[in-house]
Amino acid sequence: MVSRNRSQVKDHLGSKVLNHPELRNTKATEYMSHEEKYRYNLSRATAMLKLIDEEGMDVNEISKVMSHTVSGFTTPDGNPLAVHQVMFVPTLMNQADDDQVSRWLGDVFNGTIVGTYAQTELSHGTFVRGLRTTATYDPASRTFDLHTPDVSAAKWWPGGLGTTANHAVVMAQLYTDGQPRGIHPFMVAIRDRETHRPLPGITVGEIGPKLGQNTLNNGYLLFDHVKVPRENMLMRNARVNEDGSYTKPSHQKASYGTMVFTRVAIALDTVDALQIAATIAARYSIVRRQGEPRDDGQEPQIIDYQTQQLKVLPHIAACYVLRASTARLWEHHTHVTSEVRGGDTALLPELHATACCLKALVTQDCSEAIEALRLSCGGHGYMTASRLPALYAYATAGATYEGENTVLLLQTARYLVKQAGGSHAPPAAGSAVTYLSRPADDTPFAVGSPAAYVAAVGRVARGRVTEVAAALQADRQTMPEADAWNQSLVQLVAAALAHGRYFVVREFAEVVSQQSSSRAIQQMLQLLFSVYLAHAVSRAEGDFITYGGLTPSDIRLNRRHLLRLLAELRPHMIPLTDAFDLPDRLINSTLGAWDGDVYRRMFEQASHSPLNTDEVPASFHQAMLRSKL
Ligand SMILES: CCCCCCCC/C=C\CCCCC/C=C/C(=O)SCCNC(=O)CCNC(=O)[C@H](O)C(C)(C)COP(=O)(O)OP(=O)(O)OC[C@H]1O[C@@H](n2cnc3c(N)ncnc32)[C@H](O)[C@@H]1OP(=O)(O)O
Ligand SMILES: Cc1cc2nc3c(=O)[nH]c(=O)nc-3n(C[C@H](O)[C@H](O)[C@H](O)COP(=O)(O)OP(=O)(O)OC[C@H]3O[C@@H](n4cnc5c(N)ncnc54)[C@H](O)[C@@H]3O)c2cc1C
Image 1 (tube, rainbow, N blue to C red):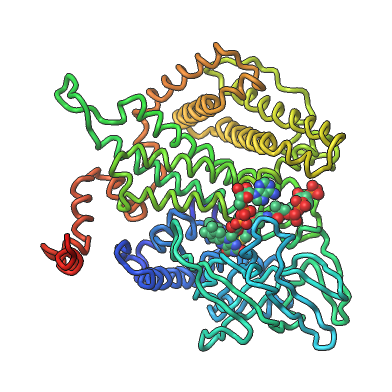
Image 2 (cartoon, helix red, strand yellow):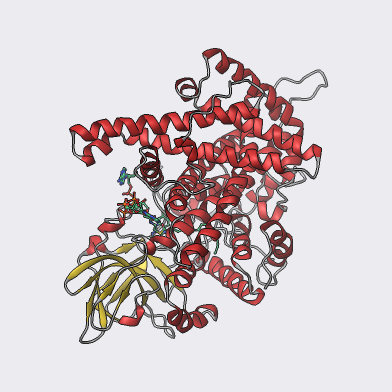
């Protein structure tokens, strides 16, 4: 099938999902039991999987229909097949060799094999090298022995593992010839394909309720000396031959490839959640009136309070800016992956550094923004029916899974300090770190000039990175490496975030400069960019004085400038959120519907409370009248 870009996909497939016979009729799930929610979300996830298969979707199309915009409609409580689709299938495609792909993929696509990605253990998630599940090769039987040494090494968290998957890609410590060879992926059958009962030696189940996404169906898994054929180690990268001899991968972290992909997908996808939250808060802020009546006799719309503008409008600008850079990262990932498949891993270190940094920056910014947007809706934002709590629960999970954000930022920082110290291979043309080896951009700061802001953001990134690199270098002379590193952790994280911010604003500067179809659109993009930049400075004033070349007077001017820009943006707020093109059924919020009929919808949702079915619920008689109250 011909590949379509993301926006074309939206129109074509969005309506297919919304009008699909098994998906178009939705049910409210708030009052369902855990089991009922799971059944509802699983049956919809299965219908989606069939649709993906029937349409022969490519990865861009899948990314659209699996995006939070659509999956919030298909699987509102979390998709039990998300990890199958987003991690299990890509791991097979990229880490299985050609024979293995042809052996398994038919069954994956016809739904006979449903998988998960089982890496994290109870006692180790971040420190992947510390995983303790073992896969010991026995040349006599040509099998691996998969074993969980004790309960703390139980796999814990994999999505879909709880009760859905019958296979798992298990990340385990490989031993051949008595030697540890590091973490490698193994394809393991965990449940019988017919009966779905756990296979001998396997203990498996669901881990229990969470802050949100309760039907992701996260599970646990233990192995008691389970025999797995040699051919089930994924062998595109490293190999174990029949006699037990071991061939290393072309890149030491080749087996971490799925994580890089998923980080990129999460960065892209969390912006979808922010767009929904921003649309809800914008629409509600127009409808909601509260306060002393003005000259027209009406109470003011809450969006006309300056404080409300600050709570809502910068996050609309962030939707546009973060969408551009994450979409670019997605494209870049596709390019680097094809180079890596061809054997050239030169671009991998920087892709890893950028994916870590953007996943962390975007999930942090979006979860903070969604919480601010929820608060901007006052009491009604606290209601489940506003959808804002679930959006927050989704975005904040992204700060932890697929690499806890602090840890990922430290990966980026490691790359940056090496670049700043010249101890890494020099960056390729077009690299995002060339600024570190060039003199600082000394464009003078001027309020109102986006180029001057971008230069200042660059000086902050450069200053943060070079300062911490020097501190680290000095500490390394006087203490062990681990202590020196620990001594600088906070500054390293700040440096990586500053680098991420610079990446994001440079990408958007390019989008603005390349936009040529309409003068009006270009002006609007410039306004959004100005808001984003002024807000970025206001959030990190100390950094802009310390490293960015701004004076206290610039800071004061920027504060006023930001408020002026917000007032300028305010009349465009609704068109800018309408432009996200989110139908009411996808927004699914009492506060965020297109017609603004908030109060009627709130009453309507209250009517679904089971406690309103009878005038006096039976529980009153059972619990209160029988007690001594
Ligand atoms: C099909 C499309 C649909 C898309 C759209 C839908 C979007 C759906 C969105 C959401 C649904 C997703 C559901 C997600 C479910 C969650 C799953 C998980 O959480 S899976 C588990 C994830 N776990 C982690 O991420 C663990 C984090 N830890 C690590 O990655 C590592 O331990 C580490 C922190 C990177 C450290 O590794 P290690 O100790 O081995 O290495 P170091 O010594 O630190 O570094 C050595 C050198 O290796 C380099 N390195 C490290 N990692 C990589 C990599 N991945 N690639 C390339 N290089 C890497 C590192 O930079 C060092 O380099 P040098 O400095 O030595 O040069
Ligand atoms: C909803 C959800 C779904 C998930 N799905 C899956 C899945 O499908 N498959 C799977 O394998 N896993 C999955 N996970 C697990 C997830 O990948 C891990 O929880 C995540 O990688 C964080 O690891 P951790 O829990 O060990 O955190 P920890 O590392 O224990 O983090 C705790 C604290 O320690 C700090 N810390 C740890 N190490 C360092 C360090 N070196 N330097 C500085 N600070 C440090 C962290 O910053 C953090 O503040 C999922 C998790 C969630 C929440």
